[in-house]
Image (cartoon, rainbow, N blue to C red):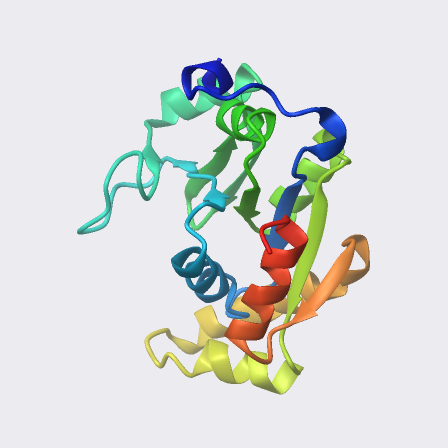
Length: 197
């Protein structure tokens, strides 16, 4: 087990950090908040997802993603080895269950940055997880962020906005909401929730 190979003893359940899940609509700034948080506190473990998409330039297997074939992903799903998984833009993404459980067992704070579908699956299998919804300051601001990239055709933007409306409507399903008015402030609040500060 990872806990013993790392030279630590398992932490009693009552003092174990809770699994924290960060979710919210596309364009709200989840990745930016998490990157800022981990720059200040690299001890917060961010789960590495498995994906069926190919690596992009500079991405490393086991660092950015675990790159797997469709057959390997089928096997992970069939064997219950993923805490959650979803399909996005023709590729599948999932969170390996074993690594998350080992980190929690060792007393390390664990953060998952996943979409709404994934957050719902985690809530089903680990109801003790803390689900945090990252909301934009306003709908107008989210539209500005999603359209401001200027790299996508109008139909893609429209699809993203339609998805964002659905995701925003799911906010009441979460334990609490953080409004992303400042990356630094949200990262600080998230660190407190994870139990680091």
